[in-house]
Each structure stands twice: as structure tokens, then as C-alpha cells.
Length: 165
Image (cartoon, rainbow, N blue to C red; front, top):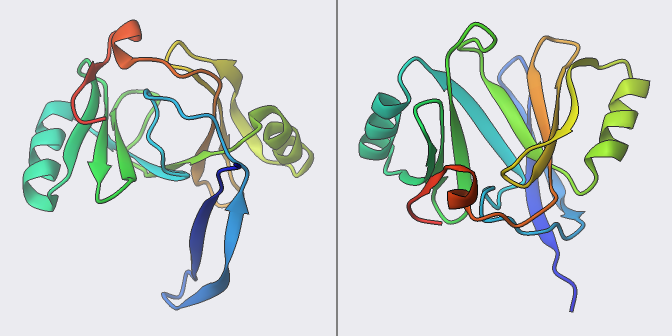
């Protein structure tokens, strides 16, 4: 039996209006990885203090901690399968919002973006938490991280501290 992920797309214009894409987009089944949230689109938000951000977002918005990676990164559960990633504000990361998108084949996606003229910020690379990722800046300066699960890795294997997976 094949597994399919479906998502509903809402397009928001810069003028504040929106239109709903009436159909559903079918995404090929992707490898499940305990070190990566199951969501397809995952916002990454930079904060100067990850611990304070975890405490405030969980208390104020009702999120729950999924995984904490030291004092520089964390994943929060949002509702029934959504997620948000908190990243440490640093010299290479601004408080500007970035978006992480899970894809079934990061190499093919990377090649498509290169052909389309996307500004590659970080080439595809494999990480010990079971993801292959690359970063790109779009034409308007928005930053995107595209990620493919390449292994199912227990967060404890790379130093993560799982809470509610």
C-alpha cells in the first residue's frame, strides 16, 4: 500500500489578498525520520535565545517541544503534525524568516533551482540527523532550505534531546 501526503495551498499576495488553490497537491511518499518533523513546509524562525523562545512560544501559543539541539536549535510541535524550527540568531542568520520545505529528491530539486537562477547559499550536504539539505535565496531575498530525509535517525544518536516525537 502506498502512502501519500496531501496539502492544501493558499496563495497570499503582497497586497494582502489571497486565493485558495482548490485542489490538493500530492507529494510522493517520503522516508520518515524521527529527527525531522513530518510536515512538508516548516518555517524556521531565528531568536537570540532559544530557551526563552521555547518557553514563550509553548506557553503563549500552546506549542510543545519536539526536539532540542543544545542551545542553538529546536523543533516545536504545532497542532496535529505541524512544526516550527527555532534557530539561533548569529552572524550568518538574521531575524528574517526562512522556510524549510521537505522534498523527496533534494538533488533533482537543487538542479532545477540552479537552472532557474536561484542564488545558492549552501550546496546540498548530508547531515548526521538523517537529512540532506541545501539553502537558496529567491528573487525577492527570501531564504529557503530544502530537505530530504535520507535516514531514520534517533535524535539521541547526534546529541538531540527528544521530548514529544
